[in-house]
Amino acid sequence: MTIPSHLASPTRLLIADDERLIADTLALIFLKEGYETLAVYSGEAILEALESFKPDLLLSDVMMPGMTGVQAALVLQTLYPHCKILLFSGQAETEDLLHESRVQGLKFELIGKPVPPRLLLAKLRQMERAN
Image 1 (tube, rainbow, N blue to C red):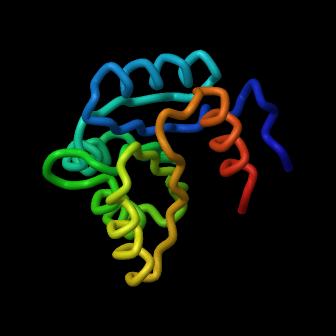
Image 2 (cartoon, rainbow, N blue to C red):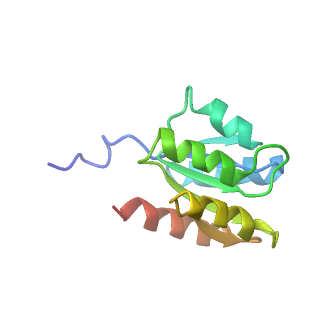
């Protein structure tokens, strides 16, 4: 049985970027697209948000001060294995961090910055449909 779309709860999207303008702008864009969004500004804040905001999707920058997006994603994936994760970065050294996650048996997709919001939206919708 399928729940009618007007009764279904929106997909919960957690967005993390240490550049507040980027995180806040993406949260507004995806809110207008029907997502329930929350913007946070660090890897540590991703984990803090889990207490009250149980995401279906995580969209996170990789390189952030303190805990990286990959480190936070590894913890998130352990706590919420159903949560799908999309990482984005404008820095080359992210490959080492992704290798670290692959060694632990986890695989995250990475999109390079800058990325147009339409491409992010298409990718997130594709991830939602994938089982």
